[in-house]
Amino acid sequence: MGMRFRKSVKICKGVKVNFSKSGASLSVGGRGHSVNFGGRGTKTTVGIPGSGLSYSTNISSHHGSNSTSYRGVSGGALPNSVQLKMNSDGKVEIQDDSGIAITDQSLLRKIKATDSYKAMVQNLENQRQQKLVEVFNEAKAENDKFVEIYKLSPRVDSQEQYIQALNNLRMPVYVKKQFNILYPAEETVYAQLTQEAKESVHGNIFKIRKMRKKFVESNLPNRMNAEIVKWTQQKGTFEAEEAKNEVSENGRYKAEFEANKAYINNIINGEDEAVGSAVKSWIESCELPVEINVDYEWRPNNHTMYLDVDLPEIEDLPEDVVVRLTSGNLKEKKKTQTTLKQEYVNLVFGLAIFISANIFNVSPSIHGIVISGYTQRRNMSGDVNDEYVYSIKFTRDIFENSVLQNVDPKDFCMCFENRSNLTKTMLMKKIEPYKVGE
Image (cartoon, rainbow, N blue to C red; front, side, top):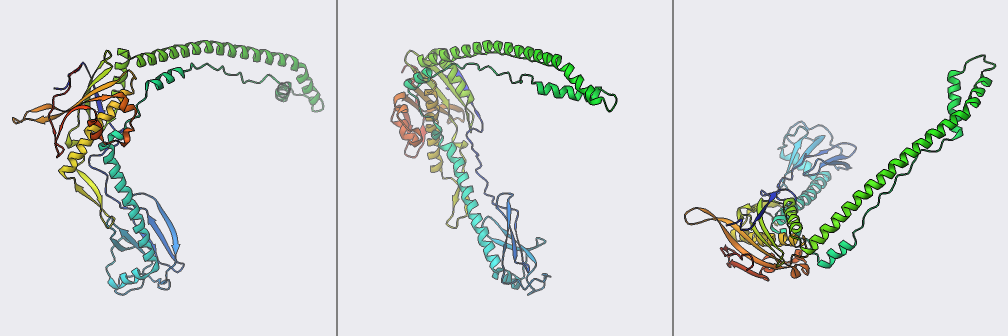
């Protein structure tokens, strides 16, 4: 079916609506955490999970007197340093400074009895929980940006707002630049001549000052006149160039202003070419997590835009979801079929709202949109066919007076005249879409 209308534009797969089918990573590992036991207190280095950041602080230990080196013998003294490794489940492993796990139970009990160890473990647990919250929120946001795409819909503007925008249109005026070279100063020219005299006038040491002074004074009038003539010529050339720029730029500004004014007028009046061009431009600039086609036809005689949308498939939805356990840990599990169907219904109806809101904003002369969505399904013979699953007649006035981010996508769409056969189990059955003029 598809391609019922004359024009077709592809919405490309892109990253403007961030989405990851596999979901966010559950990794919360870090570079490790070191505790150094010493006579001056315990120095702690903490690697923040999931980042390359770290910080150091000193904390005291009531085992400060046991500072001899750990030599691996059973019941040995506290080592000079150990490393604590905490995984994403909160399990802590104590390692020596070579990264080898310490297994001596007597020594482990001594390390775990220190205040510094307890503080360190609590510190790591706090950071782990914070990171888990961040990962959970990121995973949910990635899923919601796709399933709740209707929340990205713009507020639909009224005709009065378009007219106000037209009336507020102002033509810019070129502002000439100022000539910023200073008028020649006698002091500056005098200093230049003085330097030249030092370099070019030579003679008896007793007469040299007088000779150089005479050189400066005799050349000063002519040099000043020359500098003034040079400055005047530069100023004249600059101002003539700016005068040309003023004429040229103001001419360009006027042409652009008139073109913009005419374009907005054409948009307001629903001129066929302007509206069609604006619709094509928006669709081509839009990017979604999946690639879809939008076929469209503008009928200015009844102020209606007809849209056919090649909908995403349910398989395009992420199959896994990240959940938080009572322990605070995260787990990735498969979504139920019920959840997937509900999310798919939200997606396809939300897509109708998102596309239509943007199309309404192309021109206030678009009073209605008939949007029909179809998807690819296999028949009993195994052949893949296009099947329409909804066809909705949207009206501009309801869009203008709705906060689209707060609606339920399915319920909002169902409040308009529509053709949809949605079962209680959220299965979207085949329907016959509205035809042009119907």
